[in-house]
Structure formats: C-alpha cells, structure tokens
Length: 427
Image (cartoon, rainbow, N blue to C red):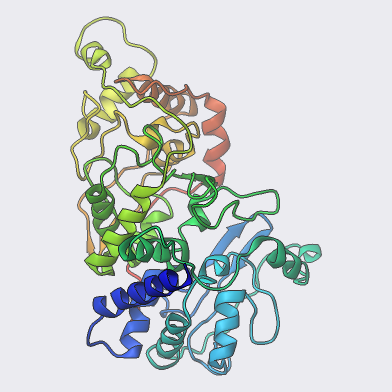
C-alpha cells in the first residue's frame, strides 16, 4: 500500500512537470499562483498585483487582505522559505500571529513541499515589490485576539500534505490535489459548521462540496446530485465551464467570476481535465429524480388564457434571453429549465442575480459580450418573488416558491453589479 501511494505521488508530480515542461522555477510558481487564484484576494481593481487591500466580509467582521509582494517593509520581503511555508500551510505569519482562515490555509496545507518552494521562488523573484502599508481589518475589539485560532486549527485543520487515493489513477489524484488544495474549492462550496469551519476537507465526508451560503450567494453543489448538483453535467461540460465560464448548462456568477477571470482559463488542459474527472466522480448526497422537461408553461405563455403570477414579468423581461421555453441560448444565455441553480432549495443566488445582475466574464483579458442585467430598480420585491416563483415552478422545475420578504432581506445587503471590465494583472 505504501509503495502504491509513493508511486501515485510520483505520477501526480510528474504530471505537473509535464504540464510545465521547460519552465523555470519562477514560471512554475507563477502557474501555481494562478491555480491558487492568489491575485483575486490580494489585489484590488486599479491597484498593483498582490499589494493587498481587498476588503472581505466574514462572520466576525471585515478582513483586509495583506501585501504579499517582496517589499521588505510592508510585504513579505523578509520571509524565509520556512516563514512562507508556515504562513501558507499553517496560517502563521512570520511574527507568530495566527492568520484568519479567510486565508484558505486548511486547503493549502495539502500543498507539496516542491510546490511551496516554487510559489516562494515566484513571490520573491517574480513579483515586483510594492511599498504599500497594510490596512487594519474592521473586527470588534473583543474578537481581535488571535490565540483562539490555535485551538481552532487543532480542531478543524487537517494534516500537512496530500495523500493520494491508491484506488484511483494519477489523473484523478491530480484533480483531487488541485480541487482540495490549490484551488481551495471547499472554502466556498463546502458548508460551514458552528465555528465557521469547513465541515469536510476531502471527499471522505459527503458534506464536501455539497454547496454553501456565501455572502448572499449560494455556492452550488458540485457533487453528483441529479437536480441540484453536477449529476447531469459531463466531464466536458465541467471542463468547458472552468475554461470559459459557461457551457450548455450554466454561466458563471458570484465569487466564481473571480476564479474564471483570474485563474482556471490559464491552467493547462490536462489540469482542467483532471479537475473535471475528480469532480464528476463525487457521488450524490441524496437520491433525486432526474429532471424531465414539461412544455405546459411554454404553451401557457404562448396562449391567451390568464397567466400565473410572475409569468407576465418573465415574458417581458426574461424571455428574450432565456426563451419562452426556458431553454435559453447556450452557451452564453443559460437555460432555466432544469438548471441546478434554479432547482436548489436555497434561492439566494437567483434573487441576487435578478436584483443585481452579473459582472462581465473576462477570459484571458477578453470580456464576454453578454451578461445578466440588474432589475433592482425596475422590479419590486413582490415582482421579483413572483417571477422567480414562476421560473422555479415552470418547465418541470418543481422547486419551491419565494416570498417577497426573501427579496426584501437581500436587497439592502447586496450591491448592483457593474459593466466595468476588471482585469487583475499578475505582471
């Protein structure tokens, strides 16, 4: 068993080297930083790469991300490899401060020594130093002591290093390494416990990637559930989504936009495929009936009989893009019939999208021509609840209706999207 595990580790690492053949250690580190999407959290629009300053809302207050350029005074320029390793994989800064787990070190703990070394080489030699002082976080004084995080880490973080599954091949294990580790997908898509810990860090527990509420969005279920997960997505569907932000079944939104705009399209096709293979292998968390299309709502919309509440709003504001038949115009305008986001028990993402629209998808610097517009001004809380109730009940979706209060509660705590194209450059 140990020999098999050792061989798998070698094969996984060999696949990394193959994906980056002929690259220097600094370039390899840049690739890994892309995979970890470091730029999205440690940069702001219009600012210098990795200089920090992004404000992140958390259950304990607003955390401001730090400068991780090699500036000696305000960044990590004095960090040794050991200091860097402790920060990335253990959540402990050079001065001994415990980092808040908004920094996904429970996931980064799985990184190999070689990958940590490459990341260190990149941040020390490939990133220009930026002299920019870190801004204080906005957390109540009684929650600022960091020593409780030592207990939190003991209880809720896993061991250092990635353990491959000897029952799976090297490609599956490579995908698992990227999803569980560098990609830190569980940080958003795994539900949290009472202490705000991820309730699972790998597929050994079925809570892993089951979907979770996040900043007034609902990060979707990435497991094999037929109606509310990826059960109806193929490996090609998943790979296309990671590479471009859309496919024949859905379009990226919410925090995942940062991942598509700044990370996954830059990954090698072999790595994208490995992630798709791993995600597609995750079993469903519950038995669900496969979606079956019903054209009754389409015929009703086309007829002259009285329409159910929300139908008129749908016909006037939504059908031009998503179709009278709810089948959309893929891959840019997603279908609503059978869409897992529509079928999910938590409608937060639907409400947020209708209220605020979506930011532009920007793949390798090129923005998409289409995006969801906002309707927070045009539609009342009652109208949004009615149109979403219509969508969730039409074409065989058979999901629950919404109440106006669900829209009313999200309206003041969310912000309208912008059509501004934001590109966070790493160079």
